[in-house]
Length: 109
Image 1 (tube, rainbow, N blue to C red):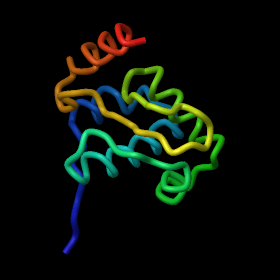
Image 2 (cartoon, rainbow, N blue to C red):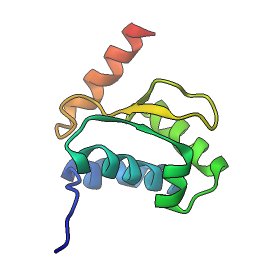
Image 3 (cartoon, rainbow, N blue to C red):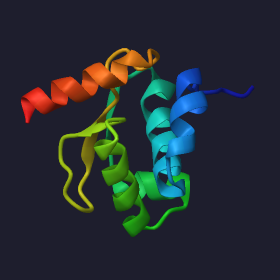
């Protein structure tokens, strides 16, 4: 029996085309480790992402940074090679959630 992870349609239709290869691979890993286990956040290490994506540490760093800048994720510990708590925007399945998530982060920072 095969299992699967649902990926929101708006991500595939709107966001995926705006991402570079490293960002896309890292994001798919994040979706698998979060939504795939019915969570909105998880602690992820570079080694986990490397195993799943086949990317180098440099590419992972670039992918995480780009995703955070685009507001697709929030990371609690953006230091290089550290395990990070990665959080998806609330109401991830709704396109307007990204706008609200980015506004909330701007207030917190």
